[in-house]
Image (cartoon, rainbow, N blue to C red):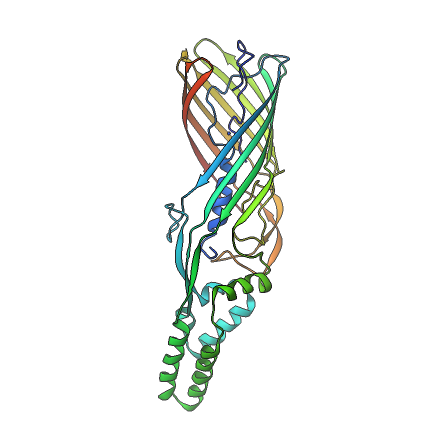
Length: 367
């Protein structure tokens, strides 16, 4: 989890002032949760980040961030809103279980391509994601240019599930078509088609209750529904050193490490909200402030690189849909990230700062 200035410390000449689907065909919730977890520290990073505590000064700080995500991804994977509408086909479950894969293979041996037509139902989901991070910080000015800092977030997150599931008549339709094919088929072929038609006619209705039972008792997931979690996030330790200061520019470098203290993704909860990356992440950042008009107008730019140390985590092996009955302990390498910030701030009133910034983030693929 990144902490772009979760707490802002006083500048040297002002030490008294203290300034972060039930089914979806991609891993929708995992992407949302990781994005939210990483944004906890990015939210509202204050500009003027070369201002640090002077020598001998110590400070405690508290920040509170409230997050609400009304967005979604559409069926093409493009960000629009979190609401998801789609259909659940029999073949969508192929990668979830070896038993289902064998059934699909048997069906296709009798009637090639039939399994792809067996729609079990349609779903409409509208998850509402919200979170709150309470961030506690500690800073210590070692010299007038060197400061040590630590940030610890306490996070509360909720994924509220709304929507429904509607059963499809595709199974009964397919059984009727098989009956019609058997009338003109050879005797051996006719028997196979009749048996398959009879199985589809007697197949249990795939209702929402059946799906819930399948997920919980067969696949080993927690019951689907609204999820709430409370825990700490990843802890950040860092050193900040201002190596060049003058009237027109302030330049600093910050290096440190994010510790994997945040709760990781639970493979048994589909709409889980991970609070950390489960990996040690050393980072380095270069920070530059330009007080063009002093406190009346200041521009800031920064760039950082974070490396995620390979780790091991328990995951469900998945392909096309985010469900599987197989869990393994795997070697996991989160993609390294580059971040760039451009911002401006202005202190128009006494001890009141207005600021805005844009953060660009590029992350390599996880492996």
